Image 1: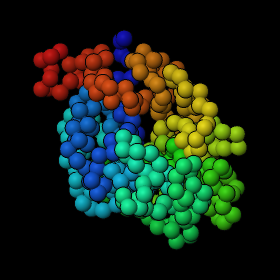
Image 2: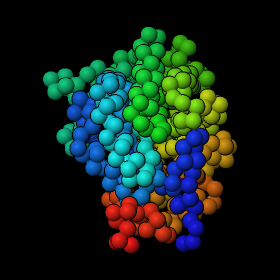
Image 3: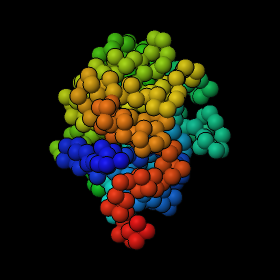
Length: 352
């Protein structure tokens, strides 16, 4: 493949990424008190050495109540910020850029690490009361506390403070997690946000929380610093969040300073009928890109270079985010590069 688009640079505001193959944020559930551990350093540095353009660090909680599990990374204090510095430096040393996904799990927080159990962690084992736009639980989980006005603004301030710490830690970008049934998504979907105050019910009121979060983040980062968002483009459930609503929201978020959308789907409620298959989410990304003009990334069973290249050359996305494929093969980008020696670290170039 000569001069593939996949290996061409992508510019987002003041950031140039060396290629369009990004590491999707994939939770490692390996932190202690929200702090980076040696596993994280190895995991992210290895994918950077393997040739990704941008490594997105997994869901990183903006406050303790927002952790998916007790073993999630955090950015709610300065010790966590400082611990992330060596990880950022290691990825930069390998030639890649690095972002962090700022997250709050809402009613899907306080769950067990997947290989240790399922459902809500009991209080005796370190569980906590979750918060959401609603007091209705995710199926099989403990009921959350519905956020009042003061609580809402406190969470928004936590996102802003985490963004400020991300800049201080040396990250090149932040991604707001607005997908997979976590807090931002809970506010967006009519299935979960049935509030009757200024934060829910009508479409525009359901948009308000994420708009305020983006405004708060944008105030804490430099003008040249790109802000990304991951969205679930549809709930795949009748009466739920739709692609059309996603498009209208993203038009507003673009005006507020969002530069790139990472398009996923589902996760709000169990039992959704999702048509899973190779590239199954690409049509969602393609329509979003076409109708919003935002730089767009796509995900979902994209496992081959030819497949990724066709998506990009067809104008269906601007970048490819790989998750499980890069867990299986951290050197996938390097192995498939047209000029592997150009992408390889100098220490490895003799292999090519």
